[in-house]
Image: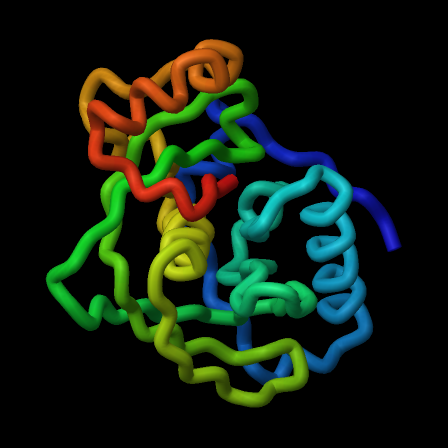
Length: 181
């Protein structure tokens, strides 16, 4: 397995629409090795999710911690459906936008449909922080970065966010269950 290089904001791959994966290619050795590398890279850089475009592969694949306290899974050709009107605000960061945080409001309840790396279909409902993580990562598949979705005037350097987080949370009605990256 290998640690992959993470693309930073400004690299064209992060603004591309990723190509779907042919289900027939899922079981190939090359694809399975890429999946292992994507998960290993996510863990190495201390992320809770990582999309293939972030490691210079414009394909519709995401590694994410979908269920708390379980190993990360590979999501292939994921589709998200919003299931309710509720939203949540969380401070998001991104491995491709190092050293920054911004407040993002996203749907709080979603349905996730995808193929797993075994070829099996996944169809789950996610709430809260896990829903936010999956939406953040799936945005990468459409060339969208969290900075495109931030609440105006909330983008800041990580150092300042850490210093002022509690005061900012009180002012901005933030759900502090976790921060996504």
